[in-house]
Length: 286
Image 1: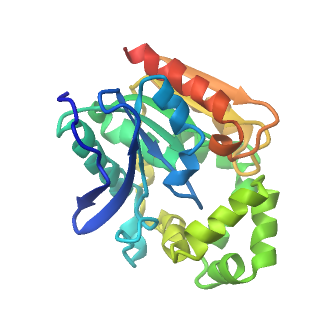
Image 2: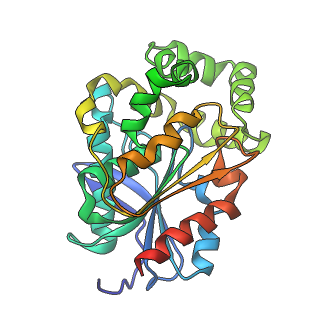
Image 3: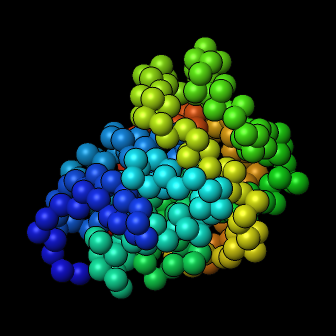
């Protein structure tokens, strides 16, 4: 891969423009960081500097619906296959049309990261999925564990208008829900500033509303790249069963890292432990 001489600030694909936070040594191996809901690239602010100190370059993108210039209006425009293609466009910009990068994704970003490893494996050197198990394990967990009860909000988000009203306009209710999920007060305020006040909420909810348009068969594709899953035992959204059974879906070196006493928001609440897991994985590819 040719050495980069300039920072990447945005990437365009099919008329959509994705803002990018490109930092760390330009000649370092690139690590693509994919945020989840309801956060943006800044969710990696405690992780990225530690990766830079270890010699790696980080590329944190604002994904579809979050980047102000990448907010299509139709539900079907937020299918996972399209989200993965957005990430491939960023990989192209960083590593060239045939290059590969390390990929780290949290929450919905982990789903995109899994999709990259499933369907664009030649572009992924290693995968570190944070919080969310392999999609095939997740589907099985809906009938094999209490995951369906934990995923009630995914059905609620299918409703029009009401989720935006509760999350965007009824401040006490939305703050209470995010706090219940384990967010700190500071991160709740960040969600209000970067998502709600910035006009991204409806588009971010589009990821959930596009679920009926995804092909379930795509979710059951196995993964053949070196993979680590980082899961925390106080996650209110993801049950243990899917995390423990992800190993069955990975045909490559695999590690399961369980963090004790940590909520769903691992990148901001346990950045040191997450960085350790990421570095342990990416260094296996050196």
